[in-house]
Structure formats: C-alpha cells, structure tokens
Image 1 (cartoon, rainbow, N blue to C red):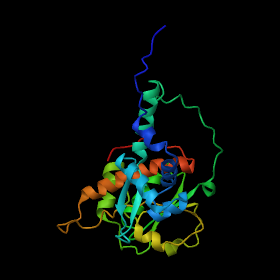
Image 2 (image 1 turned 180 degrees about the vertical axis):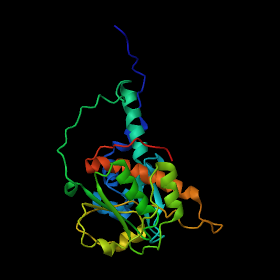
Image 3 (image 1 turned 90 degrees about the vertical axis):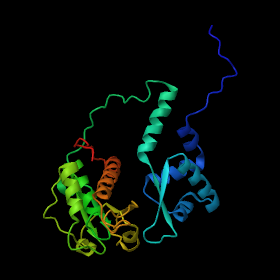
Image 4 (image 1 turned 120 degrees about the vertical axis):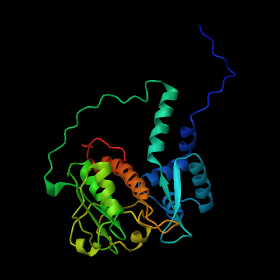
Length: 266
C-alpha cells in the first residue's frame, strides 16, 4: 500500500479560507445582492461595526471585496463584491481538490415557458444625469438579452443630451447605436411598473423614488467627471462600460434570462 506522510500539511485554497468563515460568508452573500455601506452591512448581519469592519478588511486584502468613497458623502463609502474574482477563486478551489472539478458539466437544455412582452422582467436604471451610466446599462441589458427584458433608464437631474463618449463607446465596443436617444427624468416613469430598480449613482440613490420594486445599488464613478486637467477622457467611459457589462452579465441569471449575445471585449 502506498504510504502517506503524516507531516505533510494540506492548506486549503485562499478563497476557501476567506469565504468559509461564517461572518465573512454572510458579508459576501449580502454584497452579492448589491453594493452596501458599512452601517447597512452591520444591520444585515447583526454584528458590531468594529467586527464587520475587521472582516471587510480581510476580504479587501484578499481581493474579494473592493471599496470606493461615496459621491454623496465623502466621509462614507460603498463596498462591492468582485464577482469575477470570486468566480476564479471558486474554479481554483475546485481544481485544488480534483483537476476535473473546474470543468463545466454539459449544459442541459432549459425549457422555459414562452413569455409575452408584458411578462418580461422590467428593469429601471437610474443615475443623476442619465447621460452615461444608466443609458449604458439600459442599452447593454437590452443588447445582451435580445430585448427579452423591458428596460429603461432615467435621471434624477437629467442633462440635456447623452454624453457623446457614452454613445461612442457603445458603438465602438458593442456595436450599439444610441444616436438619437434622449435623456429623461425619473418622474416621466412614475406610472410604469418595474420589478427591479438599479441606481448607479450614490447621489441618485438618496432621492430615487421607490417604484414599489426591488432596489439594488451599484456604486459607480461618473465617467463624465473632469480629471485633474479639467478634461473628460474617453478611457473613463471605456472602463465604465466594461464594468457595467460585467454587472449586467451577472444580473441576467437573477432575472432568469440566458445570455444571447457573445461578449465583445471593450
């Protein structure tokens, strides 16, 4: 019989060591639902703030969670789960146990009941100006689902026009034409039914109407904000569009809508 040395210590993969802690797992689960401030996470998990902050720091150090300052209140901040990093960590953990585990099993065909447009899930994206983040999200969700989601966007203080860089990045990176689209105020949609309302701006989150829908927040910087030289760079819109596209692809399983468009790299 083969002998197994007793002095060999098998160390679990870093992802498992981070995620397996009960409190950290609860924090990851809460952040999988959307971006949250520390006080909101404290309420969700029912633990003292100092303990929550300690475990958030460990998750940040491990790369599973990121944080950014709130554009509404610079003394506050939002935590975000890095879903791509988690997916890679899960795959690596499976490979550490057995080389076949990261491989995807053959997908069984899913039979879904045919839906009429009136039965499509309805999603509203909201930011302040409705000139970049929310129209990009609206366009990408419609694009990736081939129109099988009723989606709209609006602003709490809409600008007169879409930012030209937002129109350009959708056209060049995703083949989406938004020329001729207009901005609108959230009040224009007051009579519409939505299943999900997603705010992409910290300021808009504070004043967005309820709409009686499931609320989710994605804390994202405004790519239209001038940099230190007073210029608005196109690279910021490329980064924002790529980030929103990742969020959209992870949103689709929540909506129970399979992806129908192959991803293009911005």
